[in-house]
Amino acid sequence: QSVLTQPPSVSTAPGQKVTISCSGSSSNIGNNYVSWYQQLPGTAPKLLIYDNNKRPSGIPDRFSGSKSGTSATLGITGLQTGDEADYYCVTWDNSLSAWVFGGGTKLTVL
Amino acid sequence: QVQLQESGPGLVKPSGTLSLTCAVSGGSISSSNWWSWVRQPPGKGLEWIGEIYQSGSTNHNPSLKSRVTISIDKSKNQFSLKLSSVTAADTAVYYCARRLGLGYYFDYWGQGTLVTVSS
Image 1 (spheres, rainbow over the protein chains, first blue to last red):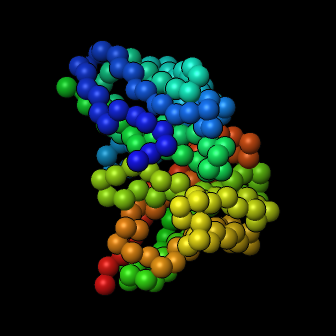
Image 2 (cartoon, helix red, strand yellow):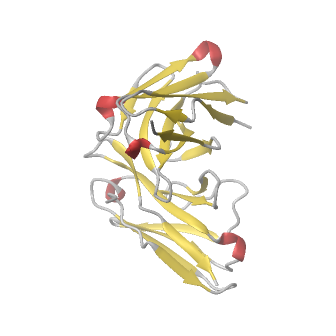
């Protein structure tokens, strides 16, 4: 299983908001920045959030990130069917000396 | 705009060596960035394989380290992955990606290439 724990799936209605959690430990999230990626079906991952809460140019402010202790959260508001995708958190693990990914969360917009 | 493009055989025999190349365009591979390999087995999540800096320094996933070789070719602006002693468990889409020098994120990704391990 993954070093970072994410819920396997979340679902909500269009226009609503959702949060996706990413739980780790002091060796990873607790002491390093977290980034988030969106992977639409059949495509490469795309950077959504970096340094816990920063958005790259072109990413709408409907997407937000936060971190508290050894957990991080991705928030998405005003959900659209086009947001249906897998979402991954990533950070560096000091004990493993490796980049670690969460197991991914499949977002369904019903 | 930086672009990355993976290339290599789509089929590798068990116990053989998987070899992939990532061509970088729109920027220099000699810049202060790390160049990574990430893979995704069919229907599963993402797994970091390893990365290389323009100096040749590398970091590897401990679970794969003994089988992985990552190299860089500045003259061709590309970097490569070799994974030895492959099994069916190594069947995956392989992505190359860029990480900014001191950054904790991967900002550019290739489109990915499927490698199947089968006889």
